[in-house]
Amino acid sequence: MAGIKAKAKLKNGVVKVKAMIKHPMMTYNMAEKKTGSRDNANFITHFSATVNGETVVDMSTSQFLSKNPIFKFEFKGIGKKGDKVELLAVDRKGKTYKGKAKIK
Image (cartoon, rainbow, N blue to C red; front, side, top):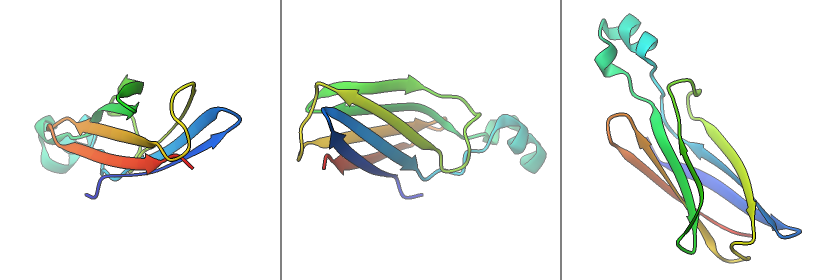
């Protein structure tokens, strides 16, 4: 499992970000079918993004995301070309995934 791949583009004052988290996303039902126990479920539970120390996205997620989920979001008023969007995701077992995207 690699981390987060992302792109960020500034156009007309709005930064559009597209990020993919490399994660298998095993739901409770999938874990129970595969291993006989729901304890082995593992999925992204939290996702956040910051620019220059300011949070632009902060969300809790559930097991109902696809494998290698893609998040798209946009914001304005924060950041300029050359700044970096820092991304962080945490899964159910506490593993963190990090990524950066330079605003172009």
